Image 1: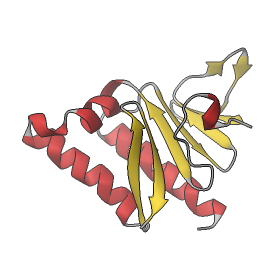
Image 2: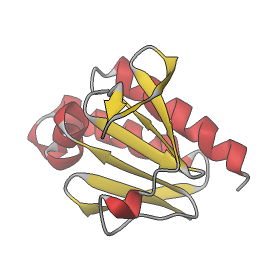
Image 3: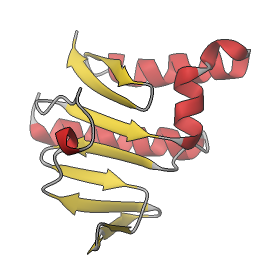
Length: 125
């Protein structure tokens, strides 16, 4: 998939997370950069590209978690998204949101796998 397409997927993830009030403590790594919810990171100020979205150049997800996929897109998360992805079976709303989140990737020909409870990477179907 073209690098531009991973930016499109990342944009959809941000929108989905904002719509489901779970765009908190989240970072999306793709194309050698990272979109995160925090405005500063280890003394670096992110470029604000949208409301509560800051871009950082040259961020390698392998510096933060082992199971990153540099060829596609990887994420780390806490807060709301963590709850959705790790306790979706607890009620029908979370199950629906989990399925919707999964469908976001399926529409693009990908699926996600969690490496740890707090990160994931996507792979081609």
